[in-house]
Image (cartoon, rainbow, N blue to C red; front, side, top):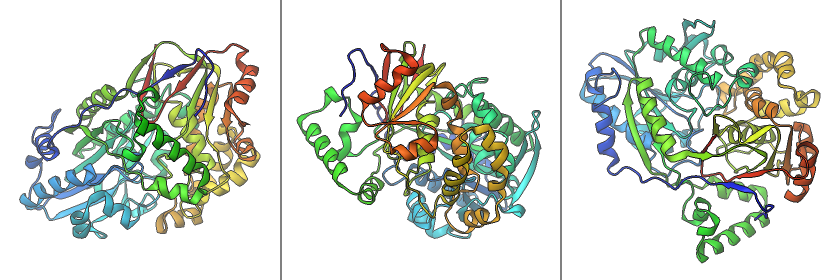
Length: 503
């Protein structure tokens, strides 16, 4: 618990929306009544066709949802329709891009026992962005961006994409063109210049997010190449934590005596437990999300519906920016599921994700201060993040400047044979992945005059190029160097997730 100065503004997420009843009925309705210019799914299926289903990987939702995962439910419906149509050439690919390969157990949990037993491993598998024979070149956009995707998907009569939309930058054309692409395509939008020219990654309106604009160009090129994509997108409400951590879903003044007791117990246990035990506890957390929308059909028409549902749940109007914004970083981000939150991922989560949870303009003024709560331990997962270790020890030791890092080191890490081998045969993130995570925070880093980690390990924080403070009071005192002695302060009270619509 922290005591903020008098006058601090607290931005809370909206209340959780009610979920849909009878999910199976809603899935059937979406498949039979698509939006946009798409035909119903049964009319797109025929005997002798090549059908590929792509599905989002373990990076979303966060935390993982209680089973059955909505992807399992949708897969079962799509596979049943395909079987009725006589489709026997069907493969399911997990759209990992340059993320780590999911384990068999993780895939089984996501797709369910029936789908897993029927298709794993020959017809249900992780995408391999380094399989040169398995990648098809689609062409170039008007901006000169190379577009390559899975050959299996590109040569299919129909590609069905199953999405869980957790935040506004998910889904739409940011499903196929990044999820089934390799380095040659991804480098066009996962780069420093694109990140610096994105006003917010979470604002996909044209001209607001350069990364989204790039994926839209790529997606439209894929569509014009003749590949039929039947997009299925789902949205969830903000019921992020189970009952034993349910107080985290509430505003503090709404806590009952039971909630207060649970908070004190959780706080004490967290303080006393060693890191390994804490991680094991949080890995077991499953979110009791309710599904708030299921839409299917043409990609852009579907995504418009998705964004409406997402904004209905997450959008919070906020008047004006602040000199200081305080963020509490959660234990989990997209790239440390069943893993370790290493320092580079802390940087990405704070300056890349939470900082960018806004529309129009950031919560913090240009040159203002971001204060983030996280211990930032000097700790890495040896299997999942091998190139991260070398990035932290070699690259950041020399420079923290994103443009210098990109020009001097990126290509070597992206093409290193050992990193490629670990990505393809183990469960390692691609060699270039830590670079992307560093660039992801480039916009926030460039915007803020100072970044201070409360409770962060001083050596680790210094390696990242930031400052560490022991307490919030210390951090506020340090912030005076940038914003003076009477700053305006906002505390961004997330999770659950929200988008600050800053006026």
